[in-house]
Image: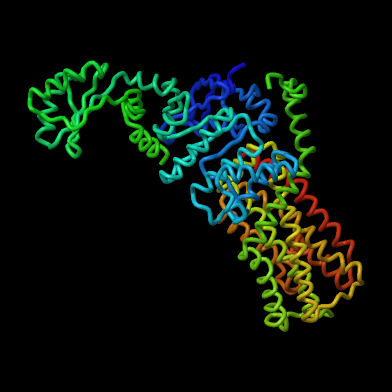
Length: 325
Length: 275
């Protein structure tokens, strides 16, 4: 049994609202699965089902071989959950928060104390360890929340939007923490609205939208689904950008060229960028256009989301927010 | 972990129930102790909570004793002797409402998601709140009795009955904590739970024998005041501290406390688990 998570045809509805519809998902042991989707796509619902907080309306799921409904009680000993709102107690110190979680995992007192110290060191919280959490920054709270969820060394950990609302520096710090975790062999299921985050951390990505799985694969496979590469040419001024666009559009798959006037960049979508580069340089040279920079860009997950759903991730999130209102 | 432990091979509903009972009974006490510890630390670290539950009751003692007391006829009893059991019950009930407010706050902030994903006994989240509030009630009751003693209250019912007063008051607050927990688990919003709680506790404490003899109230009010559990608890406290009918007040007080604990309590745990 190589899968840490097996989800079969899970659906969840609240009255008439369908939050998840026939979701299938396999997560290999020791891998990182990124669950990617806009706000309200159903990511959190799936995590809540897999962590035994919610019962599915239909379908079944096992985590580490335990059925999430029938073996819920046993399963809880082997999973950790770090949620969207950092579930740490404001009035307790960082150390006390970890201690409490450890005791509730039924670890012996001595072991909890040692483990708490290790985690505080690992998560760079030693200095703040004995201050109450009230004074912690957002990044520190998330790190503490994560530390508390790891206290029992669970082989499976769920991270529900671990970096939402964090500043870029804290986000990078948290990414490092998560990478370390994975290198120690923990299986991670991570939800995120940030395409870059999934790209950075996940071995495999499942894209979900409106409660359904719409794509699955590695970041590269998904990018391949978006079909194309981009060639971006940077020139010196707006006038040259327009002229370059004229040249480039002849090479484009769809005969169109996007212009970024601010940065003097003209870009086209092509099947395979590298072989075209020489020809493009020659053609631009013939027109006497000086090239400042030229690059083949792989599609980002933003491009992927657009290709899969016909809308950008941002638009999708705005829509579902309106739905919720 | 390819092999499931033997005890969970049984996949029937009965098997799940058995495992539920096994987890609850094995860990309930240890987990409740952890949660009680957590809630007592919270108490110690939030000055506003501490002042709300200690300084304001003391102010109430002074207010009633020196401002209203002279105008309230209490028969053979000095007003301070009449007042203390009443104000003890009132204070500990208000303090017990914190059980529900705190629980609602945990639900609101997502703390409960953490607890529910842990292999802990479900009843411990509520049990820890109730236990902590009961200990606080006991502490506050003793503190208030000390203040009362300084300004002239005396025990006229003997040592042991007097000794029992703070415990009896804390016991009644323990029962009421389950009601508060039920409200907190139902409302799930700290401010909402707080104000709802106020509207529950306020009439029950003031429409009782806590501050004035029931006989001085209008006749149409007396049917309520005389079945009000607070009246029984206050009268019991008064009998214990000042002498008087203990048994006739003890059994209704006990009955209400048991009703709160064993009927409302499980319903509260059920509400909490349904979240």
